Image (cartoon, rainbow, N blue to C red; front, side):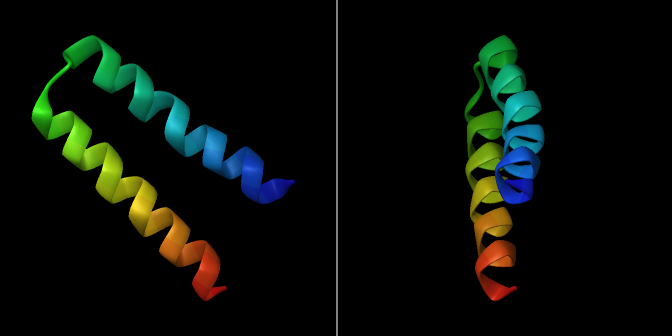
Length: 44
């Protein structure tokens, strides 16, 4: 439950940023942030 909440807190602002900018850089940054987040979760 905590993991899901943290994931939402991380993803929601990033998704809003992508939707507002609609730039390739924002998309790449979003994907790398999500990938890093899940690596961090699975390493725990």
